[in-house]
Length: 462
Image (cartoon, rainbow, N blue to C red):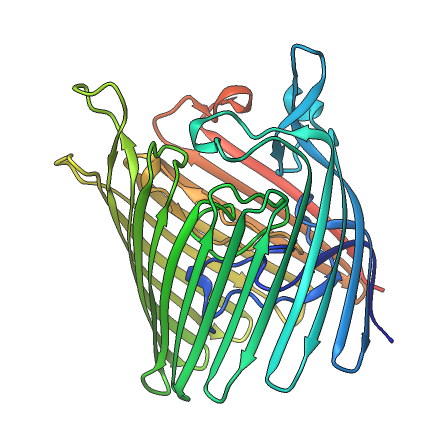
């Protein structure tokens, strides 16, 4: 029996994301239910992202407790092309911005093609679910990661094959989930999570992951500290408690280690991160929350008395106060103050940064428009104290820019809906930096102290 069918651009996600997860996997700070994002099988791709999706066809068939999915696709990606001494071409990196401005970006457009074939078989019972997933990815050019000692175990590849098993066990007050994956070279990656709810007002969870330093899979996208699923072991402990009808508290502690080198970390290392957040619902239309985050992770530091880099353990304190309120039905306001303190090891001087912004969204009932704008002030001593903040964007787009150095940022977005089936979006954003005559670096450098962009989108609904 046909259950789902996707033709064109689509996403596929199974298990915990070790074998196949082409969509967004939200990070640990976004967890509220105790587990990473739930797998959704195949679904249409509606994002403006030009990178993380499959293009082709997929079908899900089901009978009784069993469900089978077959998928196939061929994508053209932007890559950084390198020509070897033998005049053969290979790819050393993926460009996922979708921009084609500089000669290098233009030359890399659609330079890499990958063919993906895979399948998933799931069994769903009353309290137990289990499945197997296998995916093969073939590159038309050899994919060679950028050189560097920290990439020693990321070997050049032209074909990948990854398989895995996953399960979910539903108990009275607990949910246990896990997945184990194996790549073509036999390297393993595993993750298991448990959510426990001893009281309706309290949830507890534990997530353990262990990813081999040489594990390689193009479509892996799982929970972790690293941006990639490899070279990491960690234990995450979290909780969420309703203290009253109006007050909620949540937090986590994450301990992780990296068996091999990382970017700007010349040696095996460890780290830890803590977060505590309190939400207060003042009224039905107003919310205020306070968040504190501590993070410590190894980083290279120079020492004139030694010929090699030395690992330091800087730590960061981050404080955020945020308020959302709606004085009238058509007007929404958001205010934020955020401060970052960086304590480099062996350095007496503490570095810091701050971000302050005010956002206004207006949706008049008498006009078919929605208007949103934000004005932000920021200042950081270095790039290491950068602060991230989510911004409203065009439909199907996702924007979390980083604020660093000294400046101001502004954006204005208008949505106009003259007909029920027609939406027009226009967004202008600009960042103004103080004490600089250029913005960017390399081919991306532009004269002046301003970096701006304007985008428009026309959406037809039928």
